[in-house]
Image (cartoon, rainbow, N blue to C red):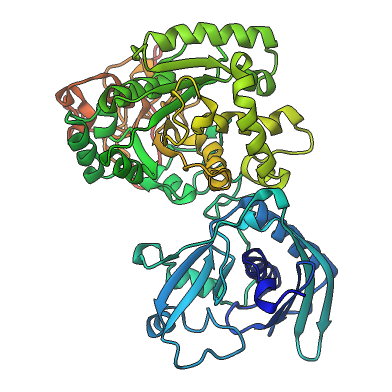
Length: 566
C-alpha cells in the first residue's frame, strides 16, 4: 500500500489547484481560506472539500461548467509558477489569499507558493508540475454539497498517460519581476464569478481565440492561419499574451559583441522584437556550443513576396554572423491540408518553385539544407511520432482551436512542423550532433507551434528550441480606409489633422509613425538617414488644417463639380 507522501504526486497536487480554481471561478468564492481539506487515495483519486461562503448553492449547470473549465485549463497547458517569498512580505502583498483553512505554524517564515494565472494561488509543501497539461485528464466522479455548512466536496480521478514520461517539476523562483500583482490576486480572492483562462484564451489568459492566438482591445486576432485587427497590431499586448520577452538594446549589443559585427537592421530597428530563451542560447554560444537555425515556408504561390523574404534575409544574417548550419522546411503537406483548391502535386511543385527564391537569398550552400516534407518525411517521421504521442487531442485543440469538423491531417500536422526543432531529425545535415540547440527565426503568429514544441522537449530528453519573433509585414491595403491603397499616397499628420497634400487620393488615413507605407522603408533601406519614420517631423512641410472640435475623422474636400453653381 502506498504511503500518503507517495499518493501526493506532483500531478495530483497540481490537479487540486486546478479543480479548486475552476470551482472558485465558476461559483464565485474567494481562493483564500476556503480549502477545508484535500485527501489523496489509491488509484489516483482525490477528494477536495471547500467552503463556498456567500456563493449561491451550486447547480447542475454550474457543475457542467466546472468540468468544462477544468478541461479548458488542461488543454491550455498554462505554466505553473512556484515562488519562495518571505511570509511577512506575502501577507503584506496578498493578505490571506495563499492560505487554506488550516493555519500555517508561526515558525515558518518563508512560504512556497504555487501560482497559475487567473486560476490558483496557494501555499504548497509538495512539488507541482511545470504546466497544467502535464496533469493529464481529470474525471469528476461525485459531488456532495452540505447546504447548512456551505461545504462542497468533489471527488475526481487523475489520469496521467504512462507514455508521457517523468513529470517536469516547476522550479521555485525568487524573481520579483515574475511575481503576480496584488491586484491580480485580489481578483482571485474576491467573491465574484470570474472567467478562467484556458483553451479558448491564450497562455496568459487572453480574451478569445485559440491558445496560439491573442485577442483583446481593438479586435486583434493572431493565429498561425489568421492575422487581423480593427487597428494596427499591438505588439506589446502580444508579448504579454504569449509570455515572450522583448528584445532589448542590451541584448542587441551582446549579439554585436559575440559576432564582432553590427547587428542586422531588422534587429536595430525593432522589426524582430521578441524572443524565447535567446539569452540562454547566447550563453551556450559564448561557452563554445554551436547551434543550428531552423526556418520554413508554406508554399502556396509561385514566388515569395517581400513579407516572406524578411525572415529569410534575417536568417541569412544569423547564419553568416554565427557561422552555423541551417535547415529550411517547405511545408507542402501543410498547404495541401489547410488550403482549399490546391492539389497535392501542385503543392509539391510550388515547394520547388519557392526553393529557387529561397536559394537566391544567398545562404551558405555548404551549411544549408532545404527540404520538402513530402520528400523528407521518412527521416522526420520517427521524431514526429514521438511528439504526437506526447500531445493529447485536448492539448492540440486548446493550442490551435481545432474543431470536430477539422480533418485528422490538420490535427496531425503540428508535430511535423515541430520535428525540425530537434537535431535527431537531421543526422546527416547536422553530422550526427544530436544535442545541438536550435534557434528559430519566425513571425510571431507561428509561436503557437513552438510553444507546443517547447512543452514536449524535456519529455523527449531534448533542449527547448529558442525563438526570435518578427513583426508582420503589412499588405498594401490600408486598414479602416475602405480598401484604399497606399499607392494613392494617403497621409495623416499629427493627431487628427487630416489633409490632402496635392496627391491623387480618395481619403486620408495614414499615421506618420505606424502607417504601412512608411513601414516598408525600414525593411529595405540600409541607411537610417534615409528613413523618414525615424525623424521627429515629416521631411516636408505639412499644410495647416483646421479640424472641428471633437471630430474623429475628416474626409478630403469634395472634388470640384464641373457644373456651374446655381
